[in-house]
Amino acid sequence: MFPKYDVIVVGAGHAGCEAAVGAANMGSSVLLVTMNMQTIAQMSCNPAMGGVAKGQIVREVDALGGYSGIVSDESMVQFRLLNRSKGPAMWSPRTQNDRMLFAGKWRSMLEANPRIDFWQEMVTGIVVKDGRACGVRTGIGIEILSNSVVLTNGTFLNGLIHIGEKQFGGGRAGERASTGITEQLIELGFESGRMKTGTPPRVDGRSLDWSKMEVQLGDENPGKFSYTDTKLPDRQLNCHITYTNQKVHDTLKEGFEKSPMFNGRIRGLGPRYCPSIEDKIDRFADRDRHQLFVEPEGWDTCEIYVNGFSSSLPEDVQFKAMKLIPGFENVKMFRPGYAIEYDFFQPTQLSTNLETKLVSGLFFAGQINGTTGYEEAACQGLMAGINAHLFTREEDPFVLKRSEAYIGVLIDDLVNKGTKEPYRMFTSRAEYRILLRQDNADIRLTKRAHAIGMNGLEERLEKIAKKENDAKAIKKYFENYSVEPREINGFFESIKSSPLNQKVKLKSVLGRPHVTLEALEDVLPKIKEYTSAFEKETVGLAEIDLKYEGYIRKEQEMVDKMNRLESVALKTDFDYHELKGLSAEAREKLTEIKPRSIGQASRISGVSPADISVLLVYMGR
Image (cartoon, rainbow, N blue to C red):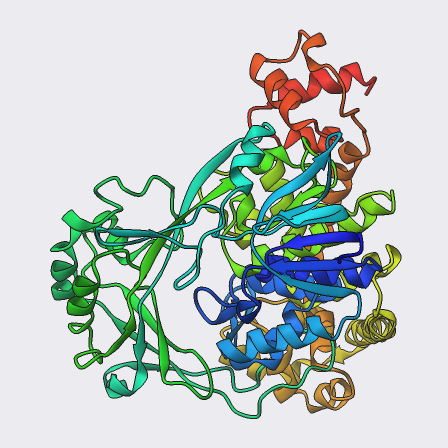
């Protein structure tokens, strides 16, 4: 009935979809197995992509040939570039999306790929022979064989939904949980744990008083995620902001005794940076209000997502409290918020290519690894799909360094440090973030993806070559263009910057704090006349490279120094117990993680600089 596939992907969420695309576009035959074909690429929580650091990840996924950026652009209802008041390392694109369009676009792109087949059923186990994943076993007893398997089960592994004192099995509202896989993996020797996440109520936008809320507009000149020529909407929908108050908090507290979070029924740890509303008012008791983002679910629906009001309290308490929020006095609820507990597997059990150490050919991606967020899941899925393909071809794994991508930071953190709570990406996690900006992801990564065999990137490479050449030309122009004091001193006076006493190069002027190219174009019309011939993003790239030249150079020097450690290879079967100079904790952690290099060993929690010195001495360094 089924052929033998190169790669079977279990789960069709954000990780599963990207895994299928990654493997298929590398040349593998792929079977994507999902419990429900109607919920492929479902936005289980908020209808948005990107945000702080997450936006950089979406651009990286796109640069590597993934589809999340394309789908996000073509289903967006609003675009905002966050953190514009800060440095460019912090600028993060974010889209508000039409939930149904997003899922529909993903499905149509998957179905357009002839290398991807589909099967709707629950997977209850992995076929393992001689320590290698050879396929999957389904709920009706079918065995489907493959050369590798990627698990992307999201919140479905023994998922348990909590609403007040009620609890019932489920992987998402209205969908059943997945059983069997956790139990088999534990038998194989894997360490599992429980995590928790939650979602807020959905409400009827027709019942809200928008006049009592702040309007949050999209950018006047919206950007996008994909480096391809995606079609963007010609208008945007507004989001809104409102706030809780003390009456809301007091009402919510009435339900605390029935809260599964406070009475111990929930054992899993929830996301630190996206707490439920009851967690917020308990932990931040001194705060008399909390911000809520009131977000539309799409172009043609009145359904509204109440971002910031995630809750597992009884539904009547949620409803009573919401009616006290400004603008929500007459609110009608579509469904209450809930918390969900699910199984995950400590990611220290993975190699840097996301293959498990216990079973060869078995890859994990997404929330099964303890992460939270669509973007974190998508990038892991893409990397797992690519590496599953490379595994079947017996080729070297594809691993991104921390200095190459946020994706590299995320995977390196997971496999070396593990996680005790849902892992979320932030710009602060990346030590080289001025190099890992959202505007240069294509330059950083597309050539790498093409070199390992990712199909469909030829046209992109031509665009990148033009972008790099144009940026060089712009920088050379800025380095040679001279500015007279009389041309610029009036502008300097207006921004309280010291005047010029002599003619200087434009590069020097641009290096001043609070001076932007956009402002200079208004003061010096010749500059605008020149830059208008180039793509806006290319001009921005050139400006950043010049303005932050010193910082970029210092970070690159740090990268070069770290790369020297990365080049010192370690054998994965090395017996660290032989090195008596290592601390007991270092011997234990190094034996568990099996680092591939001194650089990776240096990032393992519990391995000290003194331990690294012992390793370097042993290696003759």
